Length: 256
Image (cartoon, rainbow, N blue to C red):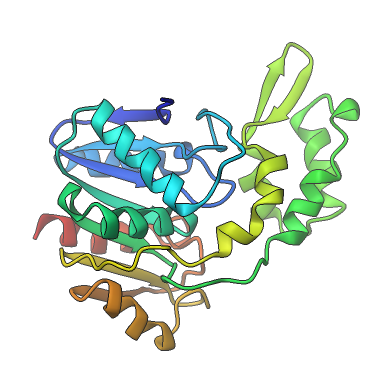
C-alpha cells in the first residue's frame, strides 16, 4: 500500500489540506503555517499523481478518498479536520460522506458536488506541447508556455511543479499523461450517496462561477449542516487571491 506524501507542521488537532488539480502541497505552505500557529497539526498533502506522491493510472474520487483513509491510518489519526480546494474539495467531500466518523469538520473551497465539463483542455494542451529536450531552465519553460498561455498567473502556478529530474533534465512533478487521460473523471460528481452531518463550511469566490446559488440545494442534500460563505474579490483560487479573508473565515469555523 502506497502512502501519500505530506509535510506535517505544528502540533495539536490534525488538519488535512488537499490541493486542487495540477497543484501540490507547497501551494498551501503559507496558510498551513498560519493554521499551525493557531494550534493545529497541519498535514499538507500531495494527492496521487501530484507533487511528490506516487503515480498511478487509477484516478477517481473513490480512489482519492481511499488514499486519504490509508493516510490517516498510517499516521494514526483517529479524526481530523479537512480543507479541500477544487479537485481536493471533491476528494474531501467524497471522504466525509463515506467516512463521516473520521472527519470532525469539513471546509470545501470553491467547488460543489456536481459534474463539471472538462475545461482545462487548453492548459493540458499547452503542457503537452512543451519540448523538454529544448528546455534547459525555468525561463525556457516559461517562454514555451507563454506561446500557449497568456495568463502569467497560470504559468507561474504550473511552473512551481518543475524540478530537476536529473542533473540536466527538468520535468513536472504531476503525472501529465494520466491527468490528461482522466480529465473526465476529474470533472465528475462525487460518487457518494451518503450525507455528512457534521459541521461543514463551503467557501466560494465572489468572482468565480464554480459555485452558484443553483448549487445550494445539492450542497445541502449531501451536507445538511453546511454554511456557505463568499470570499470577496476572489476567483477560483480564493485562498491565494484573498488569503486573509480565507484564513479568517476558516479559522473562525475551525475554532467554534
